[in-house]
Length: 499
Image 1: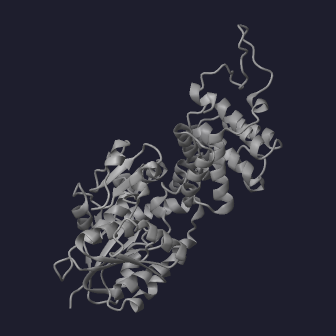
Image 2 (image 1 turned 60 degrees about the horizontal axis):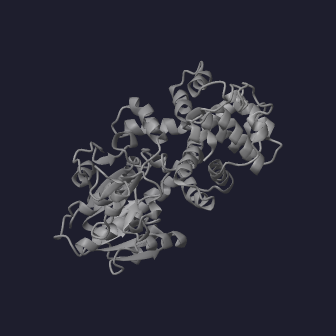
Image 3 (image 1 turned 90 degrees about the horizontal axis):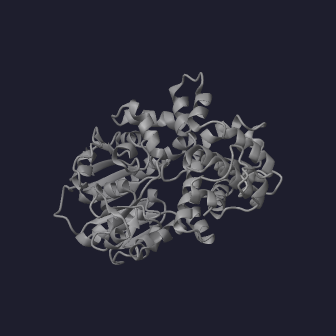
């Protein structure tokens, strides 16, 4: 840990960052911190490596971060600092770039990408972390000197000094001065692309909520999420996690919230008996497993997870199927993701499940007898999980909606053709956008007789501990991070009428 973080900024420095002499004479050293620091603080180095991997390799921060923390052998406190720094800089990238655009004498796309990432880390420390300004400047320049070179140090020092002259709120006033468009203001205030803000406004209204909730929703996107755990029913136990500091969840049976460090150190997690899974995902999977079918007494059913990778919902469904005497087929088109599905299901009795590698839109040919329950966790923009994937808001484009639409409709239509009479299809997305949710359901049911929308809100209430989620709207259901503390999961339950 750096001295600045240990002392909380109570050092012998003046407002210019120069250090007073240790003697009784109150003098300042001749060199500024940026001229002295020539090494990279390990926690900041980890954050920098994550930003570089995201930008240059199209990597996912949540996958890169643990490996980098282990490589640099960070302790728990420094690991927390690195995570907050990297994720925060990624989340707020658009707004930080707008601030930097006023402090750099050239377009940002003309900067070396590594320099820009270092600047973003410096800005986040100045704007949103309890790091003294002199430490933010000193350590960011030291990081740049160690991993980029001495050349950019004066530029980084000068730019961050300009940034440090205003607080975040003061910078927002500058950026939004004269701006009348509420979408633009929200985009800058909450660091979301403008098209995402418009999308979320439309989504709130489309699912029966008020557009006035937009700021609360965007704030929830920026809150650091707590790790959600699920003990696989009949297989896992939360006792080890509780002893390690986890708190039992108040929405779903067998769930817990873990904020005590690396869950990978828990033996129950390593064995696959307890898994990391958002509560929203737990709810929609349990709702499908619990909804009443139109035929049979339960037991001996055949279930299908049509878009299984990487296998989180498959594991939960498999555990429930094992308890009830059912079977599960998990379908995944990519072999490397199918391997993850097998790994996720490893704690479940192998006689209960099988994995098929193939296009989900051809499943009916492979299984002509069909299935009783089918989960279609369709590929989507992931706009409902922005809080867990800090870089994704800047990667996604409006055109992604149009590109994903045909795939979503094709998968749902195949599932509707494959489900047995009396059976149920759950259409799920981790996006609230109407183009990926209600529009897909309506288009897929248009012209089809013999299918009925089940009240998904009531189905979610039935498997929740509260019994009153208030997530339903016109037979479908939408969960929200600012209302339910979950990812923004959408659920539609479609029953094929019994013959």
